[in-house]
Length: 205
Ligand SMILES: Cc1cc2nc3c(=O)[nH]c(=O)nc-3n(C[C@H](O)[C@H](O)[C@H](O)COP(=O)(O)O)c2cc1C
Image (cartoon, rainbow, N blue to C red; front, side, top):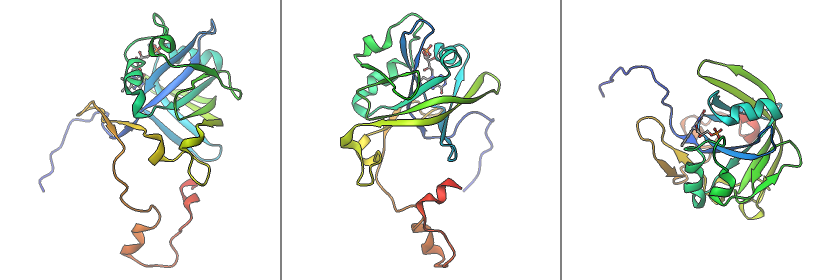
């Protein structure tokens, strides 16, 4: 297959669709769509989102030192997109999407009650990279709907109906697709060595 060299740009799909919940200095709850983010540390458990200073959320996090990350199910696709189109500076996004702000009991930030689960984070670190600043939140709590939990008591990707974002090249939303195989397991087909880890917690390394 012939390889084509492309100009460097921010393409690395798929992205998760994350809804960042914050309070403004006036106590107004706000929600924004952030696709540039993900889990970034296991001990302490941390999640990162990269935000532009132009967003209200950027300033809200610096003020409250807290944020939540909600995972929208496909049912809330329009709401998820909407909170990524307008700013909380001139919109009440909870009101306009019909989502219900619920105060986190762990951190000073709101979450949207209708979303299947949300991470409650305290601002751990932030670093200005350039146009974007990466905000790293320590996950102090998780609020989840009972009906999306697996037998292990954790949010299950096959039940949350999470949305993916294609990003540059194909800026559409996608559903999570078919299950392909067991992680930490199918790779062993290549070499049935005994030393490979089979611990799911190997991800924590
Ligand atoms: C799919 C999607 C993904 C987005 N991802 C990001 C992101 O990762 N970082 C960012 O700064 N803005 C991102 N945005 C844009 C913000 O959500 C948008 O600027 C929003 O109006 C900011 O809201 P706020 O001013 O109320 O904080 C995204 C928008 C969409 C629709």
